[in-house]
Length: 207
Ligand code: GLN
Image (cartoon, rainbow, N blue to C red; front, side):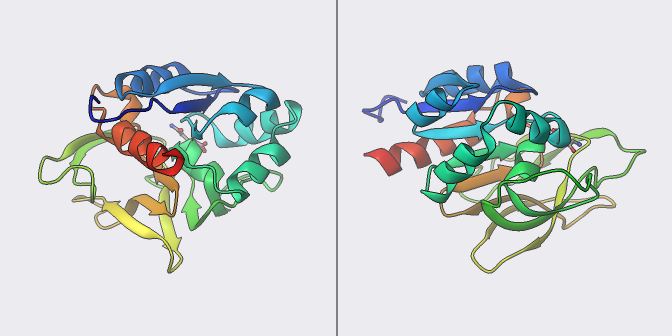
């Protein structure tokens, strides 16, 4: 990332889930990664990743760690955010097939369905084109009990859809303003393009 003069401080919400993988991917993409467990850490970052994991557990832990309201407030102020899988669920405005007490962050005008690809297909991989990111060189996308986006508001840009198979056409990557989300886990492959895209989003915001 030699073209970038600044190395934005980007947090990974570190309550639960695949935190380490995102921290490593951020470092590889030219950011300064920070694990975020406390309010003071949240206040210091230029952007935040909400990792894959289990959204209902993450929801509960946001309450336990007193981070739910501060995080909502930072998102409302326009802090850039990226959610993968459970992180996408947390950022949504509506969640289907979740627990009645599960909280979410309302940062993306989307309706997501948890575990949407079905019990039989717990996990699978496919190559996807992501608008503005892959440019004709598809990326390996790993889905693990993944959600899909079942509805998206007018302000939401659809960046990727399932290319083939029973779920063909389902929305799996979106962006709305400075908030990005994917159903899949780019942090578990060596391909850093989604993280580089997010680091660029954050850098553009602070420059
Ligand atoms: N199914 C999980 C949830 O509901 C998400 C799975 C994942 O992040 N890999 O939160």
